[in-house]
Length: 362
Image 1 (cartoon, rainbow, N blue to C red):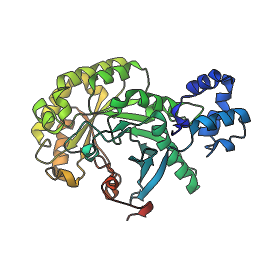
Image 2: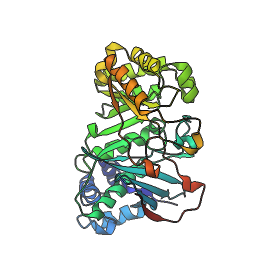
Image 3: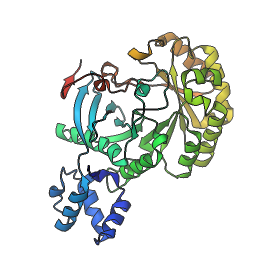
Image 4: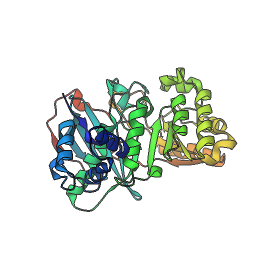
């Protein structure tokens, strides 16, 4: 039987676990610091931890529940990791370099059931949720890869935008967040974390009630029900009116600026009339707390019905929203040459044999 990941417990949960087995709760602190500050690679290296405690941990937990199957490095410095899980499934994790720091895009599920018609991640149906430990371990594996480079770089930001719908794995994602924001561990600021959802309205409300100061991004991608249902089947169950009501609840509860993600598909949702309709939908009362992030479509072989919007049409869409008083930006692209850009993540290796390797692409 596979052991659970040591990264799957918050510090409080680790203290409870130790106490239930006759150890002092305080022993969780040195374990935590060895894991996340010193980033040791085995329980044997935890020299500040009682030997009996180390032995107990080793009997019950594993440091590595995944292995690196493939690593690709893009011309822009983006690094994509393909990890093989203990059950043989493959997931992808992406490290992106920005002017403001290093951001990791994590995966939360094996496959995805949302089935957005433009996204490669949904080509493989969901087979299971990732545990909190498997999500945290993605961050740790990327950080250890950075440590090996010897340049002192640290992961500073996290986007929960990889394969899967995060709010369909709600409990594990919350535990993951609580682990990585712990100030005695990785200490990644809550406001440096963004969770993206396709629009699970009830979970948006529940997320607002957690009190976490984490950023929220909503994948909208269309300004009306007819069009959104055509490209995002989730809209049949959760139409735009229900989604906007949940967004209003989140804004009122948290007063946190929220991102509306909008992927531009040529001649589908990228006309000026769509921009005006989007401005109408967002309304003046919400605009101070909403930013529309326009996402250039990244080609996916299996979705050849869609094409990339021309640069001048992106500009026209952007300018229309600006003139209507909507805060708007265009997402910078990372790693398109290694299929690591938005909408491209998927495990091609599931359908073809590929030996473990590192590929530097230029």
